Image (cartoon, rainbow, N blue to C red; front, side, top):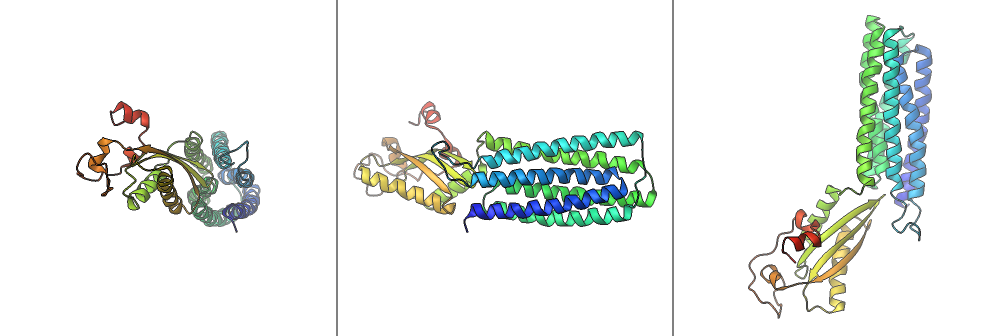
Length: 332
């Protein structure tokens, strides 16, 4: 089974779980009339809606690239996660508004014991579902599944606090505690939405993924060949579960076209193997110059003009440095 189909199946399970939990939480709210429990129920609406949006985005992201979308449809996952973050933020704001209203008109909830049991059980299921979604999202490089899982788990931690507050309310019978719970957990929900938005906006703006770049650096450094004199101007973009990488590779100037092609292919396959084939590359070859001789690892070079001193260490700064920057620094 291919990764895209697996991601869709995982998200379908998340949607089913979310629908069941939403029904249970709203039942608890109607039984208790607790605005604290309402915070959990309203967030469930967000979970279900966002779940359906994510499922649609995963199906769209699985479509192969075409003439109109040469890099595929993977970025729709980031759009989905952004919508989810925005909805979470709005839900948090609405809950805070309701909590403020109840402060001026406090009401003691009914059947709190039943409500506490339902909310606690839903929280436990949420945590398990979130763990599963994050685990599968990381395995198959799905931003949408990871974002959804983190949302579910953050919902669980807020549920723990909510249950503790409801127990305190049940013991003390102080009505304004219910409103205070709504204010606290409404704010927590809003902050979660902001965090998701920050991450997805960074992805939509093609912000450099530090972890991906570091993995590429380690891979190239570990499998470095003598003829790979220098690798620079590397850029990596993520589209769903796929990575698109382009870079410049400095080779011995006297290599013919076939030798240069083989060297570039070797670098391409090295990077692809590190990402289980989920990486496509475009490599531009540069010819070396006399300035490279002191660091060139080609021991039998017939045109060496300076003695070998030491290998040029590969660093993240050098790997990603552009041609324009190198020219400005006098390296070209």
